[in-house]
Length: 318
Image 1 (cartoon, rainbow, N blue to C red):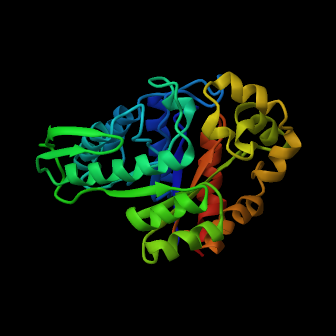
Image 2 (image 1 turned 180 degrees about the vertical axis):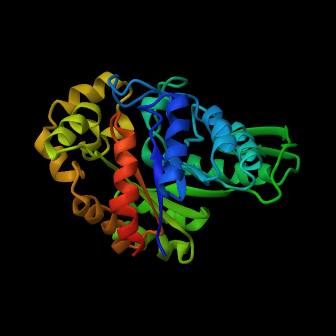
Image 3 (image 1 turned 120 degrees about the horizontal axis):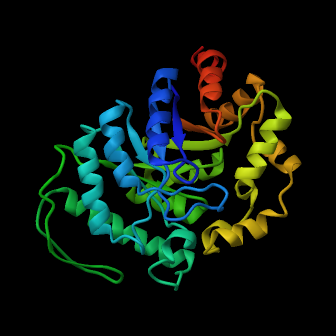
């Protein structure tokens, strides 16, 4: 049976607001949490980008919901050994309710330490090596590694959970989905793509969980929802590889000038009609996803959570 979680947007919300939203999500009946991991927001207007590991520590003490990073990039900005330590500590704090979601990342966040942005195939190789290092460190044993992309010299994690956290991998193409099937414990995707999920399953992910996520904008009327979503997240409608390649929020703002309110309304649930939201969520269910996470765009979080608690989540449970 599909479960439903709330997607905490680190790009749009302060640390304290993220904690407040997580508590509201639990009260509304959401079962799990996603949280994004960024150094920059996509657009300056979004306005935030707190350090995700500090927020996860606070969440562990203020909510009982499981937490997945959606997603962390353990390639350039942060060495996989440091991600392993952060994830192991998060798993201890949450008493096992933590999943490390990883992906190949975006230049937007990773270029801050190295202006060379590796091509996609190289980043996939780096991710496979990084996941191997992280899994070895999760054992609590002494690790030395000298690989094509990373070196680790006699490193050991002393704070580790009884069971290592699962590692899920995001994928936007067949190669990434295939790698996730081979080396990850689960799959993450932000589109209801049944073909990608099939690639993941056929590559070794037959019985592994798949998480999907989407953005919505509940509002008193559809027009105001479209306006809010267009103001804050027009970049969500940009196609292709731009999201992986552009290095600065202003570049996304420039490209997002091509996105209209009508485009947002056609591709994102906006407004107060529960059927519009249910249709978008059911697309993930029909594609075969086991968990679906929803992010509300804009400041009206209370209205969103009341709407989902009363008109959306009960329908999905039924």
